[in-house]
Length: 268
Image 1 (cartoon, rainbow, N blue to C red):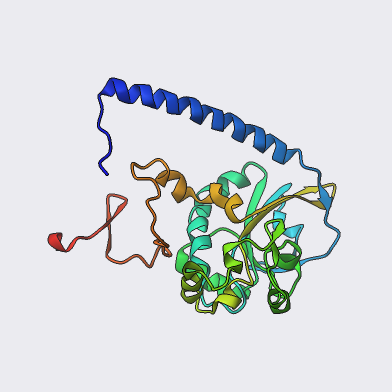
Image 2 (cartoon, rainbow, N blue to C red):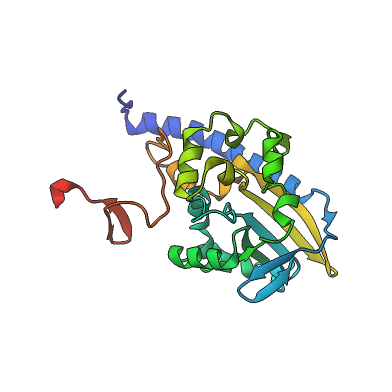
């Protein structure tokens, strides 16, 4: 279907109508952010141990001397051969703003259950420099509802995103995107879905760590920097299936003036 083509005056009238809706959404988003920050805190008394490039660390150590910590629960289970492609796309934006967060008293760290050496090798492949800790031998991922045991999985839909079942990863038969991502991670769908994505926030006050917020599934949409750009492109997300790859897996990409474009055979 052809898109309507109108005069500049007609376009401006339509744009101003949309602008009102955008402003309403911005104000609502500001209100939700304030509500999020007013949530009560939960004291974290359990001792967690992580493996980092600086050695074994506690949850408090992950703050790196700051008072706030944002943990991205990156899907990278112990039996994965590579990190989740979706998490990898989200994490592609971390390098750029981690320094800004650090200078605003916030530390950003990814946490996954894969062994530290595996995470470090993947980090080098992707060219990332943000902190990434392994929670392989601990309960951290399980306690924050982003990892599940094989027994939990066999008992039926797990509790994820604050309710049981209803998430695409729990569907049977396995949806094609889930099977595709599992294969891209070098594992099977059941193993792949025992780890899930999420974000958890913590604050350190008077030597005590408190859990302040967690979000999962589409609650992570705002972290997908690429989608924020696509939502403003003429054809939007324009998706018919899983099209994205890890950034080093796109075929025939040519770097031209800082822009990636697909090389056409006609120009070869």
